[in-house]
Length: 529
Image (cartoon, rainbow, N blue to C red; front, side, top):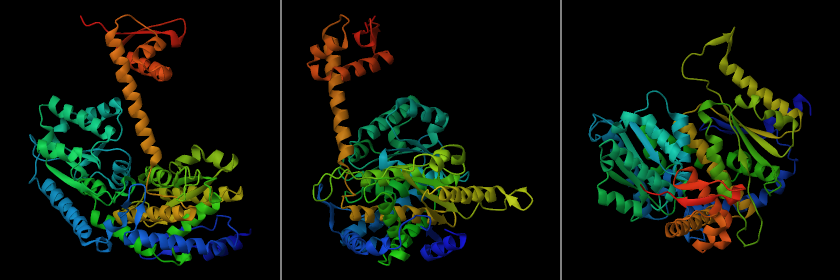
């Protein structure tokens, strides 16, 4: 294809959202001319399904609930007045609480003001807030955010160590819809212990974001925490950024959450159009379908050329893979759907895996994310009339061209800047694209049975550990993993028993004596002197 033909294809397929200054270029995807026409019917069905979702149809039949994250940025669209009131009321509560913290009307126990923010959550209760915090944070943040986003004790200890004496100025948000999420509960207990070790009251520094009446809700109310904010069953974790899950930490950090919400609302309006050529969410969904043949046959590589968007691909991993990675479709047929997502940032990837992308196995499609504004204020010229930002754009365009020359397909999403409004729009764009694509492939984007299966399996492991420790308590003599499994009554779990024993021994909770081979080591309880 000549450069003129490429330009003509670019001009024909460029989709611009004028109200946001955002554009999507799909011209370097090699779909045939008839593809969009052939997909017109399925897209109309997807638009209808999306309209029904926004109108309040039950979208998650497994749990019998609606999915209402779109109402969070347009409360007037909620199907019931009580929902509208809840959304408006929660946002008002966020604004008032934030004002109280920033004005020092609400103060920590032994300090003049709150200066640090510890967010405890996992999955959607952490990934979205982390992405927003990293993308929009700077040296002028009103509160500096930190995260417990795992149940790794070493990871949490590192955060507590970094806070040090600043724990006295730290406000902690504990985020869990059910209130029973083990990783979040564990983080809460670690934080509680850290405050107590510093001679501080956790309750006087703690806030809950949770479901009404949940275990966490009851804990917060009983202990007299500073506040509780709502999470509703019609908002899924991975689409909860515009609820208190995301807007509360963002507002406390100092982000303009009104602009964040307005960006999402404006993108929602733009992506409701049934004109596919003018709808960037529809075009994304169609390109995913084309690239993977409607089966997820190719991976989605996301390359944002902006340091502030480093966490975007990580955020998208949950949004896309948890929503679309399904064993069965809506009819119950086994389909094993999904799209794998990975990425880092440009131009870092010029020196990492771009080599394989261009010359290795062609099992992916690329999405370049371009940001037009390099920085706020004048830029240093590193060469006459050339800035570092010029180099960054050069690497993006050069990599895009190098990929095209080797028949690697790509799209380019262009943002005017990294601002609250643009980030809100970016999140809303991909939320809508995921919903539309799910309709095209006939899967439920709003449940996650695989995640629940993993949680149940983890519970079984901990039950085995309790049985193992009970068996060790009953017999002081050292024994092998097989012998301990037999004594614990879990002979079908010997490998799990061995892994548990190795972990306990490595953490000085058991005594391990080496055997003739790794799996014949002996284990016993430590004697208490």
